Length: 354
Image (cartoon, rainbow, N blue to C red):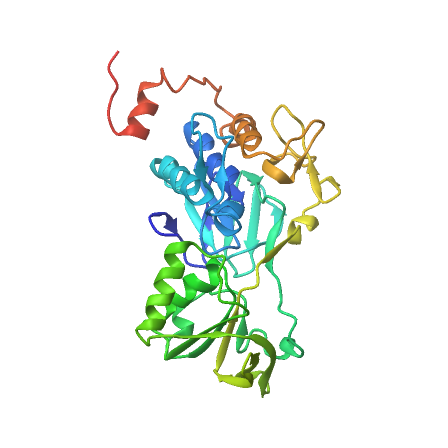
């Protein structure tokens, strides 16, 4: 996502912090802010390659109408605003990683990701929306034999695709974004889509068509019928268009057919689940396990509304509950942000006058 500036950590390292937030959607991002107001440091884990959750991945251009004080804002712009808002608190992001296991420690919790990162924290905040995003697999016979070797559903390391002859399948933001971003380093790119209409942002479509016109990438409007290759190594994508069958040569395929949401490893964390949602109280949004909180769409309680607005409210109350785990020796003296001069200095960089 252009315009964002976050602190991102490489995978496989060990960290220690006050709070771990699972999910970098709007509620997870706002949780960084609310925790930061109380002096609580946070690390954020998300399986996607950028912050924003559903706002960034599913409807970056869709107007959102129920953010107080903002008549209309897109999912992408809301994400940018939230990142700008949390910047003074210096949260560390672990993107392209999934929270894989959770264990109790003497000081709190240790969370491990699928890439070997470990984070020790005093509290855990689950803000994973409807769950972990997992890619929709295209209905191509035998594709499983190539997965993880020459067929991929996400770009975790851009350098891994340098010098490759790529076939990129799909017509949404991810397909076009990676077509544009990988073009300078790839040997050759062919974008394959079933029709000459695209769901991506108009700016991305314009950039893609300019690359096609300049002969820097190929565009194939066709249906994918199969893959050619052996031993997990792809040699080409069999396609069919109005002129008949053909093969698009490639040594690597990226397929972007959208995402589905699943609860994933969070289901194994020992929390009280109800229809793949996590039961919480409405005082602190704490789960059945002390020190683990849940906000956003995954939180379940009487009267729950799945609104970003509601998730923001939940983040505020959660942060006050988390404070007592992070600073058990302190008494919480919360000030309104309009009267907290030191806090205003942290956020705005200036000392307000009376």
